[in-house]
View 1 (spheres, rainbow, N blue to C red):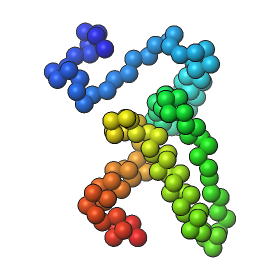
View 2: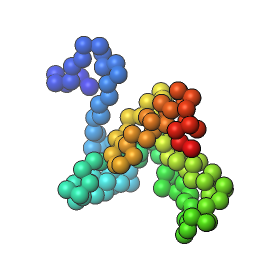
View 3: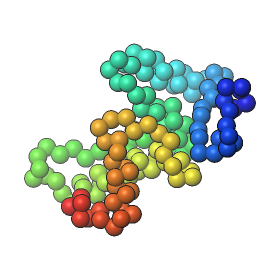
View 4: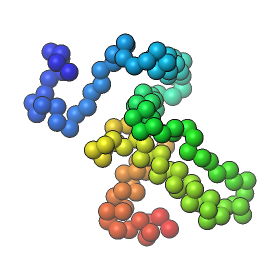
Length: 136
């Protein structure tokens, strides 16, 4: 943060940057980080974004939440869609996005993928009071 190339006119308010400490964390955490980096390197031509796996790893550790085990609903046909399946899926989606939200309320994560605008859309619709009108 105190390097000559990292300067600010407003004391870095509203800006984030990360510094990598190759000796930080436990040996197990460093191995996990190295696996994440290797996976990104091997797939960088197929998946351009990082999926913020380092951020997600950090948030999982801070919040003691296993993002990968949020529970899934497997549906074979549309006739099998029950109210409980919809509730479970919505809870899973909300829990997933809440794991990407920082303590101060912003989302520092990368929304790479086809639904990257969805959280902003849903929040905007909620604020305008038209969620049910638009999404039903």
